[in-house]
Image (cartoon, rainbow, N blue to C red; front, side, top):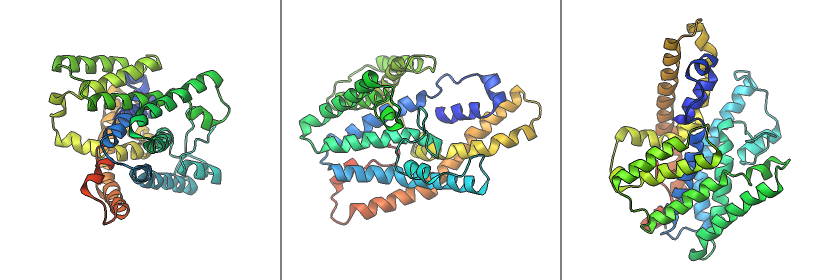
Length: 331
């Protein structure tokens, strides 16, 4: 939701003038990467997930909806309904294969929000490779690989090739931090009182402010996740928030379409921008994005993902094998 807020604010100039830069800004991505690193370790450390099965389930989770959204964007551009040029074969191929291509930092694919998925897929590939190692070497090997890549980027960068820039980015440390946090949690090393846990969350919310250095933002994201692991906090259940969490991937991929549709038409409704028009605009984007994402999740993402998992799982799969296959809401 922080990413939706960010894109909505910057999508309408009058919204930026009145609301200013979002406090959290793009830090939602940092939180997302820490959570991703955490979940991957949490679902595999005590299971017998094989590299191939793990990576296959990750592809099923990420690829279908992303490709669908990408093809929609390609179609809109080709038909002239989107203010974008028709895409080249290289742009289409690299976007679909999660290969950073555009000469920018970050390298933006056709569906621009997909730049984070380039990092995700690279992390999944490394994770799958280290799943082939002996169990006691998996985590340390993964962490060392991520750290070495970042150090290489610092010492030898900046690189002229987008792939090298992406795969040696300091953002990889966020996956490493989440993975290490999961290891500590599974070993019972995060026994905090409720007041301490809430304090970590509060301190983390301060740390992820967009004005802070990258390392402080990383620390803030880790503190938020660590504090949220307290049993009392984990026990809080909200059906509404659970549904929003389930639909979060759909929300991430679809909200830009809605913003692109609303922004050009908004000045026609409110020729003179005001605080009221800004509040209505933000409320409209947040509400419509949420509803659209839930509908996408309920009628496209969930049925498609479930069918593909069923095809891959096969009749011989045992119940215990599902531990490496995150359910909705688990990333």
